[in-house]
Amino acid sequence: MSPRTPTSRPTPRSAPRPTPRSAPRPTPRSAPRARPGPDDLRRTFEAVPARTSAEGEPFAASWWGRAWVDALESLSMDEARLARGRAYADDGQVAAITVTPGRIVAYVHGSRARPYRAELRLRTFTDPGWDTLLDAVAAHPGHLSALLAKEMPHSLAHTAEEAGVRLLPAADDLDPSCTCPDHGRPCKHVAALCFQTALLLDSDPFVLLLMRGRGERELLDELGRRNAEHSARERPAAPAVPSVGAREAFAARFLPPLPAPLPVPPHPGQPPSYPDLPGARDPLGLDHLATDAAARAHALLTTGRDPLAGLTPWQDAVRLAAARPTAGLTATTRALYRELAYATGRTTTDLARAVAAWRQGDAEGLAVLETPWDPPAGPFDRARPALAAADFPRFAPWRNHLTHPDGSLQLRFGHDHRWYGYESDPGADDWWPRAAPDPDPVSALEALLAGDSVPDTSGTDPLYVR
Image 1 (tube, rainbow, N blue to C red):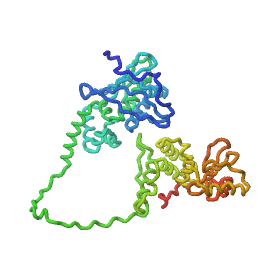
Image 2: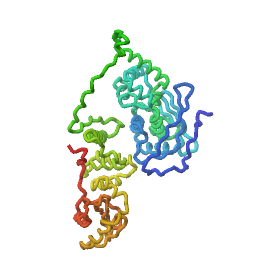
Image 3: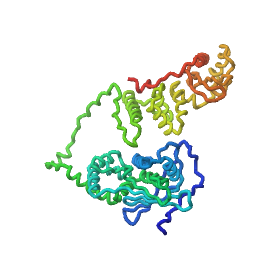
Image 4: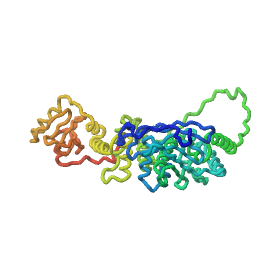
């Protein structure tokens, strides 16, 4: 096979994509399969088929894969080329990728029939640099365990950097080249190769170490040896143990009773502060989740039950969002809404509407918003005569809904026998919870007409009350 012939042909550009690009949830990515080379210093990964990604979704899943994409973006001054390269990668136009020390090569299909040979060179470590890195990693057994699990913790990269070795690339580490006539740095073909390389790093951080100059087997052997030497140096000499007679050793003994448990603190503890690390989750969002977990644990410890254990993931996401203040949404609150909406497969508008329903009536308010039902004979049937007696027009019934003739107001009957007020633009069928629920339909409608808003219960979750 000629060296300029790709080892595999990606999916043609005209092939239909499985779902539109605006799909709410991304298609799960599968890790590319690698074909080992003649030694540990050459790995070839099969072409990744076309896939779809949601708008705004990070291309890489791991923080080190996103750090690789950040290095690519800092290298380029042309966002259009990067966008075109990402589209090429999404469309499966990158053929098999070969990784060797200091170099990544693949053929990329562009607008012409013949593919281009894209190449990216990366600065490798010197032997003293490897010695420094391996000694630093061997001194922390958790780093070796993480690598064996195909993970790269933040602490490993920080340990390497503190030792004077920069493991993750920066823009000045990358040297792109391509056989296409485009002289951009990088061109869209090299950008596509870089995006696909981020997927390789997601599934196996040893690919990055191979780019830096050494293969997986060599590194694991060397790390195992250095870790054993380090443990031997750190282990104190075992003290001499006097011998004990068998009769004494097997004599019956009674252990003292366990001490009494520590008193339960009056309030949940505060979580630690989370640093704003590159590629990590939003620290304020993590603080919010940790505070919520601590409050739930304290409630379980003091009452013996978790009042939120029966919530579905969607109900719990709505509860978390409802605990944030409504007036003047901050950047942190908006980020939390985006994260919760994305994690539950909903839009931020869906979440905002659900939050209003939760503040109106907790889980029952959310059920009234999302699940129509057929009430038995009784209070629901008496509501229309009561509204007519109060000089209100005839409301149209449908299941547990009573709708004003002009289509702008609605009362919904809940399982708790309370009436929940809703409002919409006439004819829009875009109903939003308004006003607090009331057992009397006339009072609920009067509160709705008076413009009483749903009370802002953020910060009054019983788990958070001090």
